Length: 221
Image (cartoon, rainbow, N blue to C red; front, top):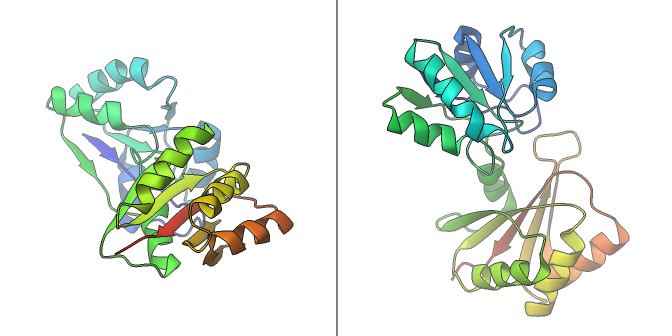
């Protein structure tokens, strides 16, 4: 059995009882960063062997994990934060599990996407999530233009180092576009900055952004 287990997006207390039960019952835990996850697991008194599973080694780790699962090894898969597979490693392992008829389950739990959507105050009846925006400005602009014409509340992950550039693009496309910058969700310095693209651009020029960011565009029609 392979279990895909969500972990807190910030606050360590945001983990389900079932997630802890599965992690404590696992024979091994596959995680993005063994040091990062080791700290979380230690906090919750989970002491299990860890194996790294990230974008750079997932392809070569899969045969090993599939063989272990075939022999009855219980494997839990976690990412650094939130739901595995969602802009995080795990997709290729999920596909291999299906291909080899390995039993698997996906536990519900914390998600930065849904947390940001709910906290933004923007319409929630129709929305889209398109992962991380491109580091290339041209591709980023195309993605944002497409989102603005979609008619659905649109969410992206964005780096604090690129946020100003992204807000400049949005302000150029439509300075009055309603935007929410959700920062450090569930953590001590959680903030929701909600205003027009033009106003937020001016604000973050004066207050350089830090931390993990979800960008939400109110483009519902």
